Image (cartoon, rainbow, N blue to C red):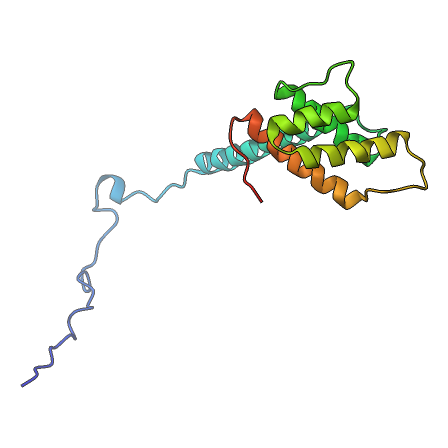
Length: 164
């Protein structure tokens, strides 16, 4: 037969009925607990300081990346940023190259010929074309820039880009 155990004494306080006089307890047990506020504040300031440094690094990187491009239109900014990345990847432009020649050479080097050619056409259209004639819309130009940027960053970090 099933015997139900008696659990009534399981949760009783073992010190129940014992009086402890704080004056009779020696040492650290008799002292009131001390909270170390200096350590807590140092930890808080340390975390805030690290977050501040990371935020300033991110802001500085963004300012450096966009430095000198304030007066350019969006397509020219994308073109300049691509040139900047290509230079870092040792694919910089030559003085005698046209935008299309440069884009073909760089596109072949990073296996993004179509994107590089479309970006160069968008740049040429913005730089040399009539303002009322738009063949490549902004979304296509930005898509080309992003895929070329990813390929150049992959080359810069010596990785293979993901194929879409």
